[in-house]
Image 1 (spheres, helix red, strand yellow):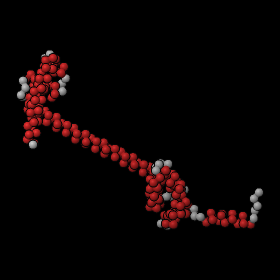
Image 2: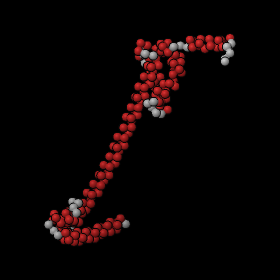
Image 3: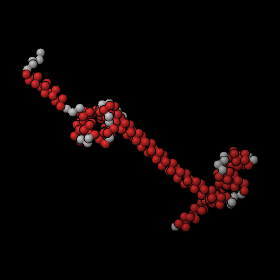
Image 4: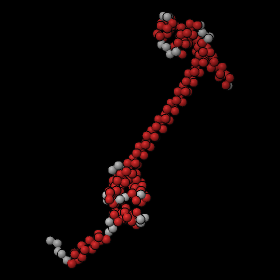
Length: 212
């Protein structure tokens, strides 16, 4: 059993007196509205941890939550005139302010992520377009070179090579399009390509000699 002494009553009385002397939240808000920096400091010290916990429920990053809290405190100082005691307690108003700021931060972060994704996708499309253009140029150049040398071949061999390589037809499709037996198409392709390879070898050798 605890023994009561005069000091016990004295301590209790001192504690109760200290609590009475502490300014109420409403009085601190009035002080803040009157641009009292000490009132803001006292109110922040009283509820800082609680406000940050509320922010962390939405912003799951300690550093980001600290930034959001600083924004909230700045809003509290700048827009303290928006608070009215008739609408609720100061703590409830501050909690609402923190939740709104946390949601705003989350929206900004999501918007940034979406913008970043769109930019990356745009970059990929640009690279893909550039590669496609290069491929088209290579194909156009190949078509021009083939066109120059196909004239050296017999008309029948020219026809099957044009259909197979410039039109992208299979040998069977070429045979059907030209009303020619498949074996004949294969023979004409083989002979025509053989002659073209000889021409390209000669052309390459000439270029090599010119480069030297």
